[in-house]
Image (cartoon, rainbow, N blue to C red; front, side):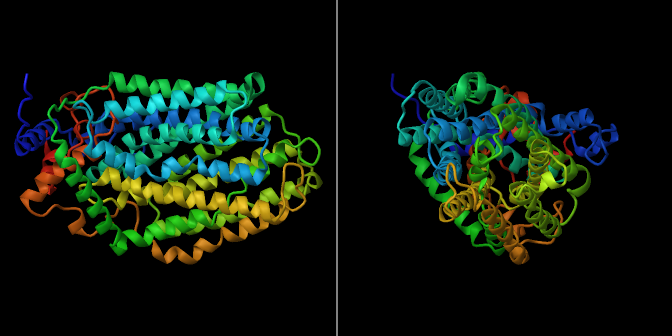
Length: 538
């Protein structure tokens, strides 16, 4: 049978737009009249109910699955298990391990590539389902290779762990697009959505870190890494159960055109001072926050020159860090979320530098002169540093969600996160170089105190770049109006399809657009008139 002709694109776009308008959620004003709208101080349960109603429960479920299970729980286990894997199985130096840990994060730096692929290349008529399944299979295979091969070469082990990281990154892109799209449609909920992300990540990380040390002790680092096949299998299951509109006969010949259009729009946005200035600050603030965690980890676990912490306590210590991160989320949500970006970033960056002095106290063993045992002080140190890091990270996430122009929200948010990840990689590699120059090895730690002081001083340098960040509050619109509106009916219709792809990346695995009853279920972009219809419907 000969293939049917491709459907008329204009008719498809118009039909998608009509479905979106018909499925719009009830207005925020009505929700507030019912007593648990976004303008009230809510209990956690009422807050979740409000988010589920305003943004649809499938969005909340997607955040929990992605940030809570895949990144939080799996990330907690991976962090401890991979540290022990490089130290005890591959037996590399701490400076090398620091570089390797940075290399495994490279898939997160090319998130725009994952976003563009899912934007412009549906598979078998589906835009989300195949990429979820692909990501899950990559993770399962990668973790099986690491866990089952007892004498895996370090290079192949690095490639396998990078593949596992890519699996999580691809799944992550699917939910980030919905966060940015919702930040434009529901600006009053932007901080709440970032809070939900951070809450799920912190709780998942708390559970993952709590059990990671015991898993490493019981089944070894390779066995613990093998258990990460379970979150990947959950990603596969989510893809198989995903309900979305099937669009056969997709005109693949136009994929290149859409790729070029999206790339051009991203470049145009980056030339805007309101965008590139905060981007420079975000990169520099992370690049100058030098990471020497592997040197600290080797010292923590060394039985002669270090503190001789066992696997169980390492997991517990990182779990305390997750509690601190959760406290940071709560502080931001209830006290700090309405503060201007510049003042909050100044305070958090300054506190981050000061909190690094706790590491110096521990390394110089001054805590023993204070009468505080190493176990207690190390746990307090981890909790405080993670809390301050989270308070610093939250406004950067909100700021990123405010910098995404209409039409490419999902892909541009992925680009901003890639800039942040490149900054983190730079800080990790500079930290590895610092450990190498100071001759900090598997058994030699006499210059670790100097590395800590240099790191703490470098953390102060981003304060000189704060002028690049707007001093407005998170409820303000940061982009020029021409970047938030489509001009011309032709451009509007063209970008409806483009953004439907950009934001349509697996965030709601259980609902079709008609069932979702919300913009997130359909993931299509409208101009200002359509947004007004969304908020006024009902």
